[in-house]
Image 1 (cartoon, rainbow over the protein chains, first blue to last red):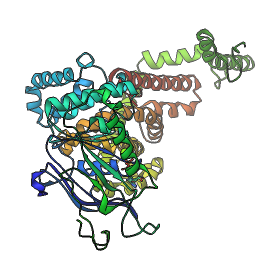
Image 2: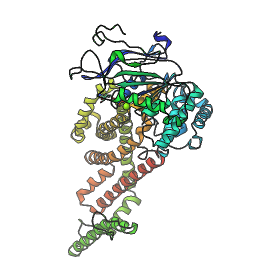
Image 3: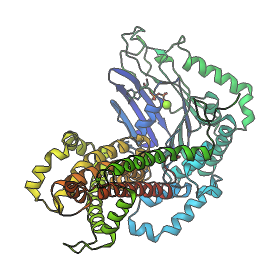
Image 4: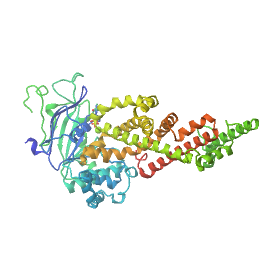
Length: 302
Length: 275
Ligand SMILES: Nc1ncnc2c1ncn2[C@@H]1O[C@H](COP(=O)(O)OP(=O)(O)O)[C@@H](O)[C@H]1O
Ligand SMILES: [Mg+2]
């Protein structure tokens, strides 16, 4: 079931250390094509670090990161990325920003010859994100929400295998954020693309995701709890959520609120420490590569 | 509360007053000069130190519109042309070289490792101190003057470009790669256009030093040029030519700066506001 090739994204036994500080401590996860995965966790637990490694900006200290069975390597067109900031190139207009992916992947002559074609295609994408009227404006002339829409159009024009997003709506006001959440769900439904979406907003994570990972350093294992254990974050919960997007009103439903509370408890509460052998890994694709010294003694779980 | 017109932290002078304020120092300097010149000329009509305005106009008219007896050149225009050629060539070479060096050092750790210490070292060498070496090595003609300007400006510009390149967020670099950029395209289509406005700013600042090196080189070894002329006529205490020449150089510097600022606003509308 966990053969790496079967999954679009396969992360196994990944550790990341900065100096002596363990940030990620044996992360295991597998993502199928078409899933909308959200990742939540306490601030500073390593969500961005995990995303940067999948993107190829950084290398894990140890472990495997595979995309379509290939090592993640350096950033390339198999992955699209939307950051919270710096997503657009300030010296290019919205249209030029969206065209860029098409232009960069061909030589000067071809770029010149197919100019009109690229322009039309980029306009289509801008229309899709509702910004055709702002095509010729520079990023600094656009609002934060519009900038992120352009950034999404820019990232998906090359049809990446997986779209990575690091708190893309984190700097937006609540109303714009809600608009963009709806937009994102629409886009996902139409295109069926695979998304890995990092956020610190629990509600956003549950609302958007068809699957939800909780990354947290608040857990325990047989190494004990003293300061001597250099423990990093791991996936402490993996939920399968509804594969069809819900209406925004769902955010107030009982089930929604209960789930949010449960996640807050097991992922964000420093006083509540789940044992590694008892993580809330409900999703059928979830797996764990536990080192023997972490496993509960006398347990046969793996 | 009344907003003070001129004094204190909360002063808010209206536009007309701002203009007057800006003009005031110039009017004052001119007035002081005229009075001082008048006093000296009353005491000694032959005074050369503080020439009157009409003496300066006469001297400039001769330099600009009467061919020189020895060379047949119109001195002012000839001097201006050769000086600007030297300065322009030196600044362009320094700007292009500094841009390419800084850009590539900022992006490619290998090149950075190779060149960083050397660049820092070279930028500490006082260019004027090696002027004699230059004269010996490349002769005392045009090449030496241009080389002096390049040596004086390139390291600073390169370091500035390096810093500008390093300021580009790693996210943007990664983003370009996910959009299919090759390393070459990344350097010349993503990073270069973004640091170009910074290069213009850098050149604006470097031009002052450029003039310094140019005039020094012309004063020491040259047969024409604005710097040469000033140091030549100094022997005859010809303040009536020196002062207008200095004003002329200042005006050229001011106009160049103004032009560069215009280029920045016209062609890089996203700069500054884009931050
Ligand atoms: N380049 C780096 N060098 C050293 N420490 C880092 C670096 N990047 C991140 N960290 C540390 O790793 C931890 C996780 O950071 P990050 O992935 O940004 O967290 P999150 O995105 O979950 O808020 C933080 O404690 C942070 O200080
Ligand atoms: Mg983060």
